[in-house]
Image 1 (tube, rainbow, N blue to C red):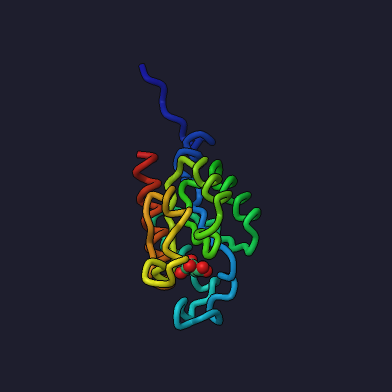
Image 2 (image 1 turned 45 degrees about the horizontal axis):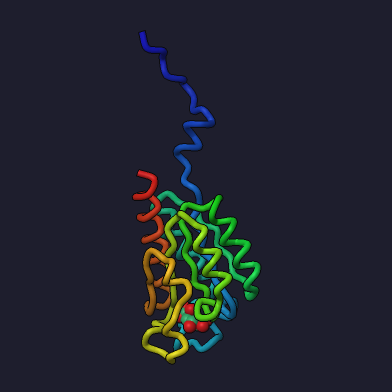
Length: 166
Ligand code: DQA
């Protein structure tokens, strides 16, 4: 006879049901969204974007770890944290995406899906924005849709994470 299943949820079964959060990391100068070149980056503040990301992630059963830093090393620390604690990473590395080999190296250590995210479309801007150290190691890129880029990136991250864990 097979033993009756437990009437309560064990720590193991709960752990299996709760997906790890999606990390949404933003790089330098994105704390100034809303006032920084609104004709390029829009009028939403980073806090507005956080709310949009949380809502979109929640519709896929995910929580979000949403952080911004102007410091390359701090972003790298958070990428390393996402490696073990996250189910996917959405990264708008801002200017560091065009310059940071160290961030690129950190991203290469991740096995979770990475989505490279931009408010503007760097490919349609100055030449120095055309190269990205992030997109080379990302699963995909979402750019050019303002704050909506973040929402789309979170949705892509959630779908990719589900595909990985299925
Ligand atoms: C950006 C584009 C980058 O080229 C720029 O350095 C940024 C923001 C974007 O979201 O459009 O700071 O990543």
